[in-house]
Image (cartoon, rainbow, N blue to C red; front, side, top):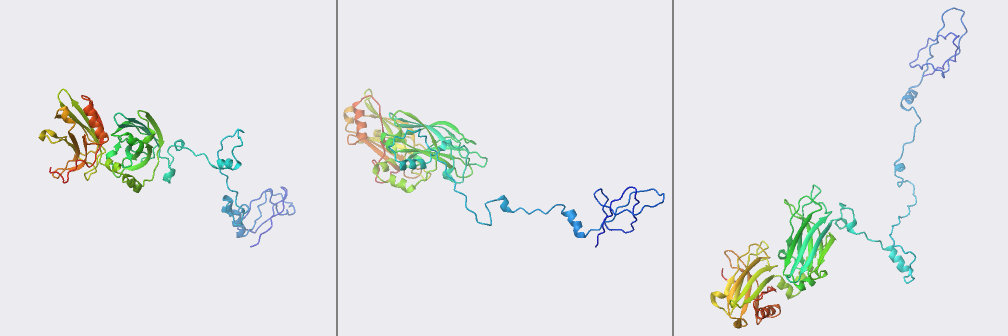
Length: 442
């Protein structure tokens, strides 16, 4: 296909040239488009008009180039332009980032006692950030790095009554455990070693909150001075789930030896997830006989000799941390007391049965009519039993008070004989004393 040249520029006085040729495409005239040379002037008086545009023939390739690619062809951007670290050619790696280490200001007070090596070691140790200062609600896939929240509580040891008061105030910034981004938290307490249902206490459950406020006081009975030096209190925060198993959020542990007698101490501690080793706990429990006796529980007994009535008043106040004898992890305890030598039916008593508990409270008192001069020859046998319907009762533990006893048991009996008319209360550890060779009939 050929392309004809455009006509040269013409003037308004020159007549338009005759053009009989036609083309497929024509380009309109413009001021910049040159025109064909004008022919000789005609002598006729016909009106003059603008000449028609001359046809321009272009190839099909040029046609598509004009419509599709009006501008210059630009290079296609490569992915390396957006990610400079990906290169086809080798390049030197960037220098490693230096870790910022917080340094304590010296203020030029170095006395020269420390060497340069010690100073460098101090500079290398970063200052750890307290978990309590982390941003609330921070979450991570790693349990060790997850912020679980804080727990505030107060502990008070009452030496006179052998009680440990645990006041649970509140928790803050707990980890969300439910699908709605909240939790249903509660706190349960255990005494270590030997955590069981016998020494378990629990607060009420608060619904749909990550900042619960309990303001609830729980009390451990039968805590002696020896327990304050050997026991550790564990406080666990859990999320209650009605449809499934309750979920563990975190825990804190406090050694009771940190507490002073009669002093109330407030704690604010961050929750942690401590790996529990059951084998270590078992070894701790099985090391000595005192721990084995502790598993059976304790009993609070009051003695008072009344000179007006010439009788001995025996009070069974309560039991604590009893051993579980039933399959549900609890017991149905009651207490039997016998004053030896046997005085017939008047020497045997028993309390009411408390259902499904390991820390029963009886507050029952029994009377033995016996002269004061004969009381020194008597022995008081106290035993705790688990009541079973239709079966023989299970023996939990017992204790004997009398002239042949030792330790705290002998001291309790002597104080009762010495201080006439005064009520004397003591906690006693249950042992195998009083256990029958065979199970007694119901």
